[in-house]
Image 1 (cartoon, rainbow, N blue to C red):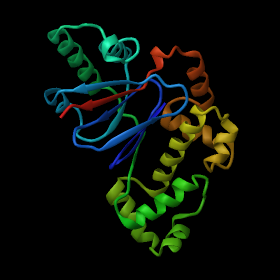
Image 2 (image 1 turned 90 degrees about the vertical axis):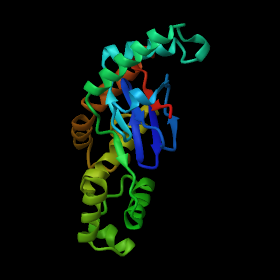
Image 3 (image 1 turned 180 degrees about the vertical axis):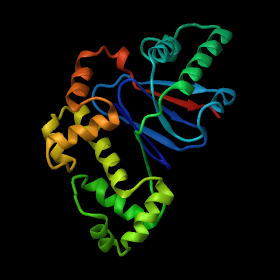
Image 4 (image 1 turned 120 degrees about the vertical axis):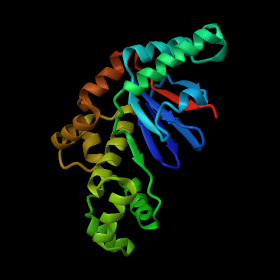
Length: 233
């Protein structure tokens, strides 16, 4: 699994997902657990067909096979298949078409720009299990609940509780990738019990934490690769 960081926020990229990073975004990524990552760069003519912001997509079987065809068995330039320029262009076009039709995943956690929201974000990044209410956090940083609620909606496009849940799911995916079990992960991320964690995780990821962990162990590396696709200019 990967985390991809840009000035807009952090994307979590589990197995069978594609992280899209447009040109102009400073970014870095980090692998968690055993990860086989592929990187593909798109020319501007293809990049403009995809959203102009960082995003995570669910990879179709066809998209995954195209990525393998473009990158070779180990994602090394000298190991990639020797496609002609026209053949590679056709493969990239198929990939772009698949991404345009793919379901965008709710796996991008937007980064606050307002100083007050950044202060709250720092507190929760350090302690994801903190169950303080927005009112309590507001008192800590000297801002009213009404002001903070408005800032979350206007700047991040979600409520505080939606943002915190997203943060906790991100943290949970990292812990699961590092080998933690469901119960330990639930409490480490602030859920009152494993059942509520399983429900929230399934709602966002589309499968239970247990099945997610099992699929990581039983699926071949090539079939579960996370991928970073970026624009070349």
